[in-house]
Length: 558
Image (cartoon, rainbow, N blue to C red; front, side, top):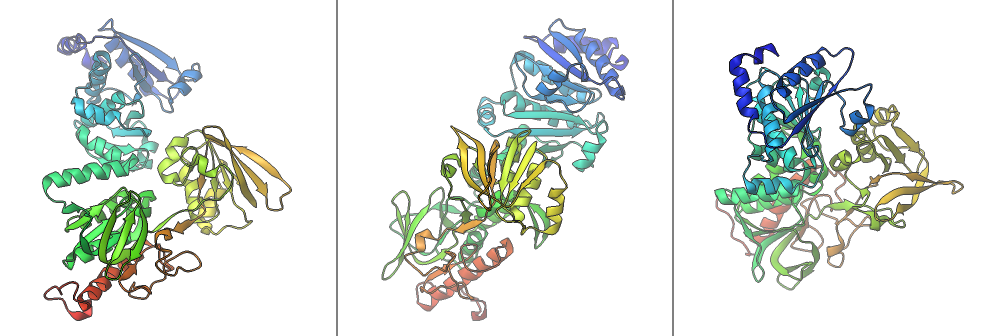
């Protein structure tokens, strides 16, 4: 490191390192062959550690220290791990030279002094993240903006043991950079999917992490910020008030219906357990008009921002238990005992994941049984999982798990699959996947958490238990029509039958989205049907003098 060791540089380094309080150990993982950068990085670290008795360097060759390689999850060389009293999940993959020398020094001082230099309130927010987070910041050693992003990521990892932060020298690990399409730096990935381009402050990185791992908390904070800026026109839903229309649900159909009803100057209320519906479980959406490919959370955010720019009343985090008809109005009952009234209802409650109905199933939901591999795949890194199902959703779940799980069992009750041929071939070609067909699940096993799944052959002559850490149920969805089963006649699948204009057999009651009998369960279809339901409800209200016609509206567009 001759370029760093002139007298001026040496004096500056001594001044910086003099602020250290507690000792820091630097672990350098190297390879003996084909790693010229390993030798250079060792020289850099030896030069730095020689300047302070509070710094210690340990060089670990990967062939001779396999246990440590596994312990610290090292898969690239050279790798530098700074340790204080514990491992903070901070990694430098490549050289800590050039511009990145500054982020390296900042990390040493942070670990030694125990100060992240972030505001106490912000430290509390970062510390509250409970989901596993893996941050990768791709850099070049000549980029002056990259150290800021690297240190921001390392600060968050220092504050929360659930967060791991990697600096990755893009030119040193070109295949990885190509995988993530790094064409400019800094480029940050979160849990291998969410991408952040450019250098951003810690708050933006935190918000982006929330968006990736806890979308509902992200939307709550983001909504609060819009309220403070005065660009969110949402009021609380009120009892003892009759709305022109109440929309039940929070998915694409409901948001579209709310937007179109509000544009007609109707008094609109919306009741939902959460905003987003099935979109919250969709990592990527393709071919929504204007978006050849877009992340599910990004499109959902655009929908919500658009809807909430119009005035409407909203009640979230609750479940509708019943919808009843009085002589003049509809009455919506919620699980907390409240009642809300409206002249019309647009029912967009969507669908929920189906269960198998076998022993211990409900007991392990949330404790080993899950429904969204896209969301939870990182939780099963290096572990064994099972996927139940045989259609596209099941094979997509398997594909999502391939980058994380060590072993994947696909269980299907039939000998043939309904998934697309290309998807089947992609999954079949991976040695991680083991097929169990035709087999059905007969029970789940475990104590506090699921540890296995018992399956039985179609003929019933063979039963075996698979030891797994998690199971993803991909067996379809059931319509959320229980609250209206006494109000209207449902079809044999429990769906709400609708007419071409989204009206139903009951005047004033409209429906849209996946809860209806419309065959195509697509976001674009739900959005269109939600808009049509709102326009039809508007016409219903105008025809009965329950709402005034908006000036300038042509009858043909009602």
